Image (tube, rainbow over all chains, first blue to last red; front, side):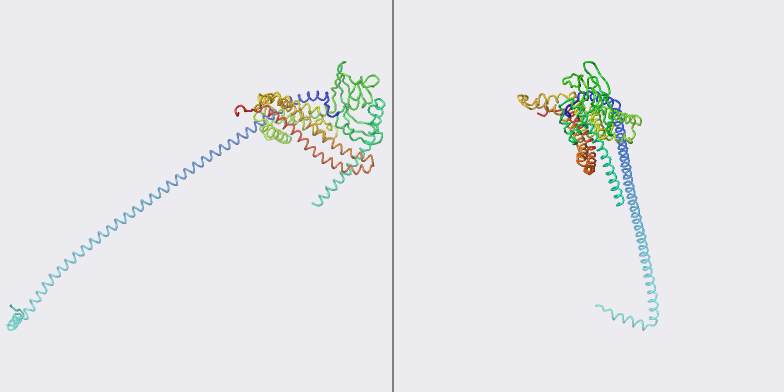
Length: 164
Length: 382
């Protein structure tokens, strides 16, 4: 039973000692330790927050860059497309005008050839007529040299012409 | 692998032999001690007949393990270090007695281990009693024993070490502000953060900072005293935290702080339990008051019982050596190996308990503080 009877002397010394220890440690140990731990934690937190902030800013910057790049790409694509269209248009126009020109030239050539041909034919016709008339004159002249031949011929022709 | 195992085994065997040899040697000195003890007991018996059963035990040549253990875990007026042959080596501690004639201060060596009386006081069974001129105990003597006993001295040493350590750590913090801790500071900081983040914050809530210094102080006070109690020789060996006076004071501190920081809702729950019909208050209020007083009592008993039990188990294992040794020397030798093995195991367990009990005391204190400062919002819910 001695064990569970608290001794008065021990209680007395324990109360004094513990109060002193509580006071000394609270004032000179726990306060600076806890304060500096808190300060350190704050500074670590601040550093982490700052790093986070920086990362966010960098991310924003990066996305900005990305956006600009995207825009530039779109613009470039548009420009390329436009240029291609323009080129196609120019080529098409050129082709069209060349076609027209050649067709026009061809038509003109054809026309001139045709007119020349007609002219030549007309000339030929006239020439042939003149020549044949001349030839016929000469043949006739030769054939009708004597009188009997002339009469025979006229008779011949007269026979063939039936007067009804 | 094998060779290292062999080496370890060899070392273990060597250690066991050495330890048993030491145990054996101390058994012999112990036998001598019990012999002298029985002598003094016999002397005392001639003086006082109330204690003859103790003397009888010694006369039979047996080892009274219970008495031995109780002597070791109880408080004492001198710090016994060793007994070599018949010579006791012990540090005399100051005796401070306050009686009607004023305060008397002298060293406990004046009692000559209970053999003599001094200035009307004598040492009896480790306690100071008032005696008359014929060395008869005056039963209802009115005096106050404020001696620096073994427990007080051990506590002073532990507290001194604690303050020195913590002030050094604090100095390191003020000097190297905002730098990563190193060495012992790291260990202390880990424990401090553990108490702050795992004990105080979750159990008290947002108002934890007010209680943190007290929680840290009780944790380290209990922890360092527990550890010193596990050291078997001089600076340690006292059963400080296993003494009910110490745990009583600690529990009272917790109780007083709880009561003084108790807010309206804390006291309201005790004296005017909400949501209960008023006639039932007659029944509930006493229960609540008992519950309130129960908390520090539980704190007091838990720490005291745990630490004392640990000391008793370790001492019990050692006593086994001497009990068997008294029957047969070789049996004592054989048992010593087992006892040492068990005690080693128990010591490791006690190291855990030393931390655990400090943790439990701190945790429960903070839970009580938490219940004292907690804000209830019953009115809003009903």
